[in-house]
Figure 1: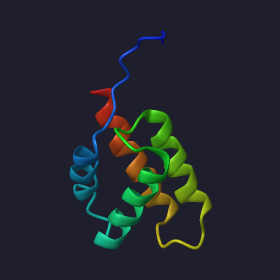
Figure 2: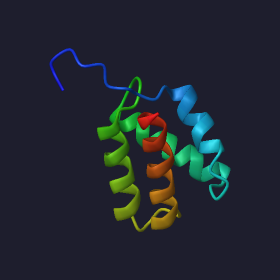
Figure 3: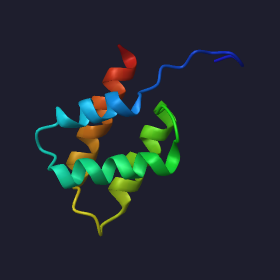
Figure 4: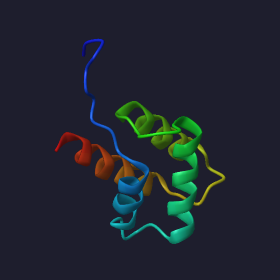
Length: 83
C-alpha cells in the first residue's frame, strides 16, 4: 500500500449494522465491542483496528465475550472489508 492508498474502512453506523447481524451477540456485548472500537478509532475502523479489538476480546477473560464470539466478529467485519 502506498502513501495515498484508499484502504476500505467501516463507519460507526455500518459497524452497528454488522454487529446486529451477529445473532450470538447480546445487546450488552455489542455495546461493549463498540466501546472497544472507540478506544482505537475516533472515526472509521480499519483492518488493523479490527485485529486489535479482537485480540483484546480474546485476551480479556473478565468480559463475557467468548473466543468463538470474538472470532465471529472478526470474520464478519473482515468479510465486509474484503467486498
